[in-house]
Image (cartoon, rainbow, N blue to C red; front, side, top):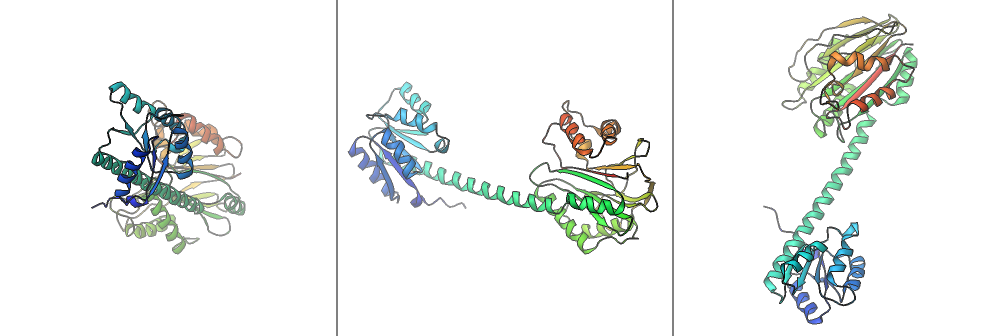
Length: 387
């Protein structure tokens, strides 16, 4: 059961030019256990008191000298900070058109004079409780937003940095570039570079089901797993995917899984050895600029233990490049509501990949032009070229 908010912390401003009315309303509010009460004698005084006293509720008379309640309420609503401040009007106006005018001016609610004590108390309580609940909800949202921002920064920290791409690429005679954009504050895409010693570089790209907090937690889990069980230099890609699958099977919840591809670039033998777990098909450009999609069939990670994965091999001589991507590129609807799909991928991506380095900035602009952001899923792009 949700407990009612404590109204003792609230502040109430009473704006009325008649002292008896101010005293009566003040006594009613005090009877509710509210001790922080301030008074104003007209609209000008009321606006000043709002800025200095910062109330949670205003009890406002309409007919006052200097500045009436209509004008004060209109002026109050022009100030962004006070647009949601509850204003309970006390008025002797009884004509429907006059009452409508009160709400047009920005009043939240209304009670009629002569003052009915129980009605005033009930309406004050309702608006103060609502005010406190909204403030609590806003504070919660702000805290969640801060925590999500921190988690997003942490997630970006576990992805390879440009300096690492450059250093490992130079050591193996490769050029690497990447792009990552989560569909929300957090995402389920993850990729990693694995230093396998001279002339060899491992690249892992994983896409966990879903996105948001749950998918991001799985990405953190995988990052930790890799730290504990990195691949060996001579370990077959299929064997390492088998190890990761067994570990993830015990970590992922029901209905959760991942697609993945692990590739070993061997510049000494001019080839790529790789194994896939239902990942999107990599796009290979040979030295002549001819593009082809590689076979990336395989079973998802994290569903069934003991799955065997297949090792595949493809030539990767100088002048070749490989493009990896998450399935957001294939499945996001374009401006006409149609996804790209593998059939059109080569024609859409190929022209950008044959340009001068770096190529991903131009490709990202082309993607944003065809698929209006935000995308419905996380997007990761990785290009590995061998000049």
